[in-house]
Length: 353
Image: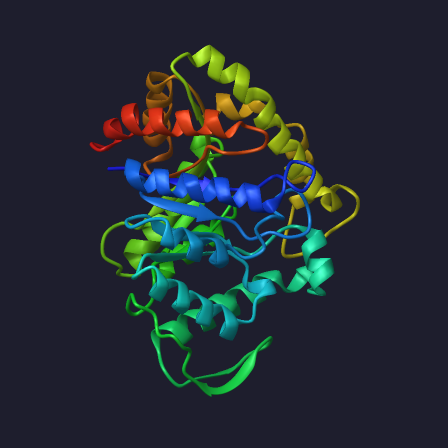
């Protein structure tokens, strides 16, 4: 069975509308998604620019979402240890888990936007080390009491993080990974879920095999959890969906390239080998390429169902899909009808996977 949740990735700012209006609409969608039987709501952590900047703290939004839902899992997609002290982050996670009655799931990511590192005064060459230390310390603080830490970036005496998590030993953890085999391997070794992007199915399949093999070799039960993120616009007429979805997705891609623009103007880091080439390639991406490789679920219910089934088979399977349905300048009314149609005609057909 593939569980499907809702993802919010705000690629807007005041030019598009006030934050109050944006989040009011998102929370209405949270209530709707809970009623329609979606699995989760997920939101990012980014700063300062149109690409994600409306969401500097996913836990704040998810705490509000907890009050507008009863069943939805509340997923950070993802928090960034590089910019958060582990003592503060662990306390906030424990608080979210308590407010939601034990529905929090915590995704961690390394961060990759040079302008964020520059403004926080964090060296990109420390990114991986900060990520490894930060996630481990947060885990220790949630799972144990009287934790003492002497690390490269953080040190503190014996401390018990409060509030204690509602889910024990801690909420489910996820690691966001793009294409580095080592990231997939480490997530499997630790027993954490993996958040990935639906890139070329064959390359993703190789990384997911690495992940699942590392999971089993570490002795964890089952075979792991894989979450893939997709853009989605579902309409009765597939051609109309593609006509209406093309420019909003192209706009999202332009804003991604804009948010990461420093990679193409000289930013370099040993922790991000080849990112300048990857971002340059992203600048050439467009709706048609995303659609061809199956990462833009835009079409009729039958078309979208077939796309998901085909991608599931080609990449080796995944347990969770996170659909981004309210993006760029998509009208709220269109996003709502798309979500309702997807829930009614696509989700039931994914239960047997």
